[in-house]
Image (tube, rainbow, N blue to C red):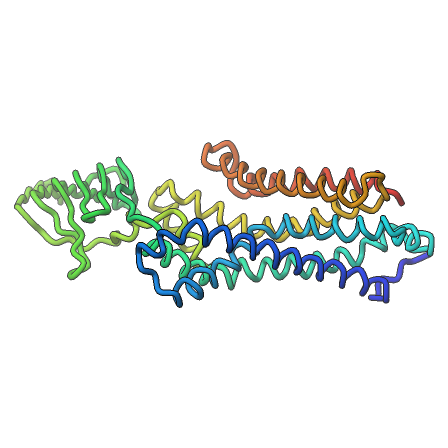
Length: 364
């Protein structure tokens, strides 16, 4: 007999339970996070004299979407475990299956709900969270974090094909680079080399001011050497490229993120990994809604002696394991063990296998 996949009364009942529980737990979790965050940061906010309007709208107003997405897998799993366990405890699952509805058909409204949550999470990731993060990070950098001191040592960058920059160290307090070198290479031939004891970013002229510089150029087999105390140099390298925090990638939309990854790859900047992790995480987290939904239904559809508490405990434990696994998988990228696209999907692949196993042994 062919299953009917039109939305019927029992489907509406399950969808209402799923979405309603999800939104309720979401509201509770966000309220708890805000309360704890306020208690932790209140001293810094008062000390830095942050305006109340900026605290409410710029920080917490834009922090909510970030945490909704961050804890989305946890909330989906707990929601499914909670209301499905309650249905099983009230013998509703038994009644549904005894009424001729297969376990696969019973999963249908769950997957429909998971689809809406996944699309909601994906839309948040691509369109809502990046601009919200931009405002939130600006607030954090201004009122909650000290200015970073050193962007890095021994910085090697390719500004564009054939043009390379080396900086021994960069100080973000005064935007000064020490032991600055700019090389232009054509094929295997060094066309020019510019060395400077230091390079200072001029905010007014928007250029680099080189001190105690030494320029060597080669053309048609002839070399020319020029030196001096100071010279202005315009490069496709701005001070923001050196002193920005790695979490700046959270404020880029998908197109900006792709452009940033392309630029950082061309430059050979190791911080490109943070952008690649951010990009693949935005797609991996929404997809997890389907996997965790199947796991949740398979785990909680059977009536247990421990009741809802037992199922809920298992659900919370597994959902936290998933989140920790997702964070831990980022280490595979930084260590070079796996490419970013694979590392960020390993938790979904692993939990997908677990979900399939639980589905196979679930009561039918």
